[in-house]
Length: 509
Ligand code: UN1
Image (tube, rainbow, N blue to C red; front, top):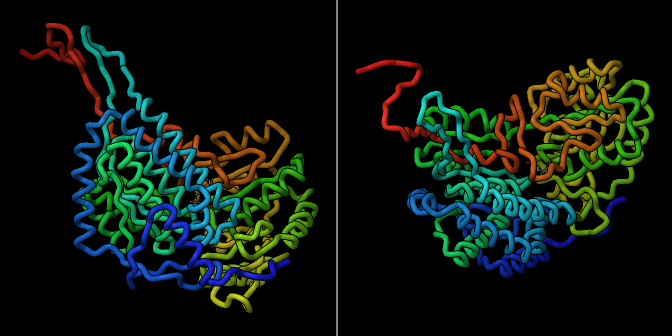
């Protein structure tokens, strides 16, 4: 069921320019990097990257702005974030257009990404009045112990193509409320949405009297990311991307005693127990595995199904997969848009070949689509592969829509299989048995940063902290108390008596 036509690159270029114009961006043409669209796989126009001198200037400007911003009362800082949220609301459709054009997301998911930005702004505005520290009982008479949270400094945000705007907003809205300033190095694949977000934040700063340099965008390649990683003026590097990238970033930032917040690869699984509501499970699984063309960090990649229901569930899933409309992400009927590039098609093909060589059976999908109309674009049928064991390819993250199905007999076995991968981002269980659900959520259950019941692995709300364990990097972003990563605590001991008492009953003088 392919959609009959794709928009032309020319039409997409016009649409991108119109959205940018509405947001107030006139892109600086250049030849350092190319805005491109996965919808046709073609370039839209060339852009200039930040030079070394501009990078240095941005670092200095963000550092200087921090000195003012950290002294601005937090609720006033919140006003900037509130204004950003308003502008995001006003430009929801323009921003969603840019996300669809550059990342290939279907309309509903692109709008959802902008909604996620609006939500985190609301959250951060509230947070600006809730940066609580604790008061601790002192062991000494006439003393008070307190914990005060202070802004950290410049936060370097390195973001990926797949959530080109929302992950920036999680970091930026919270960092700004916390009193930090931000330098953003977006993915080279999504410069236009970054320009739009930066422009709206600059407008919010103008409107609220905040320093312009609380946020700086640096378009460019890896060298800019490396600069953020190595520069001691960057107090925190918040990086989203592959585990390979995190393995480099982590030790380099640690070597200069900087902080990192890493959100790396996932290999997310769902356990489906015999008591599961299969209608609900099928819906949850198809969205989590095939939604966003399998290109979320939280995409469902492994299904661990009880042996008694495996055949039934697999039949229902393959039937649902056969009906998935694949094609133009702007078309309201489309559920699966393009992969980010034809390179991802090769990665997917390679994973499918390896899975079969390792004993797996391809049940559905894997065929390229629309190659005649868009030879440079990566349209593909999401695939399901049945495997007997977690062979090497199953234990890797393939950033494409491949779902591996495994079977289990006991829940303990299911959880062991579930946890037996190097990554630890998101997980879920479909069951109507409360004991099973609680076991999965317990310390003996899922070892992931996100563990769900009766929903899929993807599509988290911003209110909770987002991130994962093991090779996912251990960072937490977005809601709950993830804000603490953007601040530094100071412990204060205040003596309000007229006697100097030493702790631990030490006597001296
Ligand atoms: C990502 O894929 O990097 O939970 C972020 C989700 C989204 C965020 C995904 N709210 O799927």
